[in-house]
Each structure stands twice: as structure tokens, then as C-alpha cells.
Length: 173
Ligand code: K1U
Ligand code: ZN
Image (cartoon, rainbow, N blue to C red; front, side, top):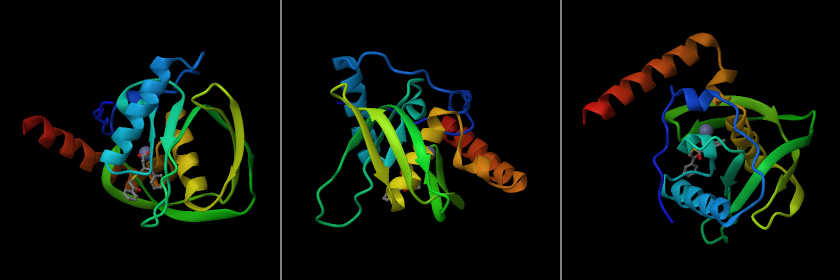
């Protein structure tokens, strides 16, 4: 398994829609493993393939936060939201592609998601709480959308400028 570099906003690949995945091959399973390792290393609770520059519809997540509770690593190919609650919830989101920036985002409190798993089986499940927030944030990445796209333009521009500065500093280092 390999830890892959995570793209930092602004990057054109983070604004583009990802392509559907066909057969779930060993190569796809290895990619999912790399993404999980990259996510845990960051550390984060989710990661979408475009964040490592791979323009495929694949996301990974594990929102288990309790100390001592077993991890639940999930990999979803071609995930789609098939139902969303009218009830909304607000969470202060972060993004591994926008380090150290956080903002409140409103999203449906519960969603039903259909996806293909690492064995090529179609799965459906209802997600709540942080899992619902995270899976929606990751599916947004697959559609070229970032959490800052939900913010007012001025706040979004401020964050984008900070990220441009961060990228310049990292390039010099
Ligand atoms: O997609 C990403 O950039 C990952 C992102 C997922 C996410 C966070 C918060 C709300 C919605 C989606 C992150 O994982 S940011 C890091 C983070 O939230 C975290 C890091 C360490 C421990 C706990 C959380
Ligand atoms: Zn993100």
C-alpha cells in the first residue's frame, strides 16, 4: 500500500467530474487500499479519488471516532444518493484539500446511498450523523464540488487566496 500525495485547492482536477468505474479489478481494490492508507495517515475521515488526481468515482471513509471502537473502513465505487431527508443538519466541515480551513455547511441529515463494493456487489445503506455529512462531502468531490462552494463568495475567495499562498510556500520549501 502507498500513501499518495493529496491535491490542494485550487487545482483543476478538484473542479472536474470523475468517471464511473467499470469492473472492480485487483487494480481498483489496490487503489481503494492506497486511499484508505492515505486517509488514515492524513488523518481524515474520508477521501475521494480526485483528491489524489485519479478521476474515477471512488471514495473511502471511516467516521468511527470513539476511542477503542472498531474501525469501519468503507470503499464505495460509483456511489449515488438515492434518497435524502428533508431534515437538515449543520456541521463544521474540513477538507484534506483545503487544510486548516473549516466552515459550517447545511446538508440533509440522512441519506440513502447505493454503491458497488470492493467485491463488485451493489450495496444500499442509510447514513446519519457524521457519516451522512461525510458521504455527501465525498460524493460532492466526485462531482467536482468543494465544501467552500456552499459559502458566500467573499469567504470562498478568502480561503482560496490562503490556499494559493500555502501552495506557493510549499513549492518554495
Ligand atoms: O474529503 C476530505 O477532504 C476529507 C475530510 C472529510 C470531512 C470532514 C468533515 C466533514 C465532512 C467531511 C476530512 O477528513 S477533514 C479531517 C477531519 O475531519 C478529521 C481529521 C482527524 C480526525 C477527525 C476528523
Ligand atoms: Zn474534502
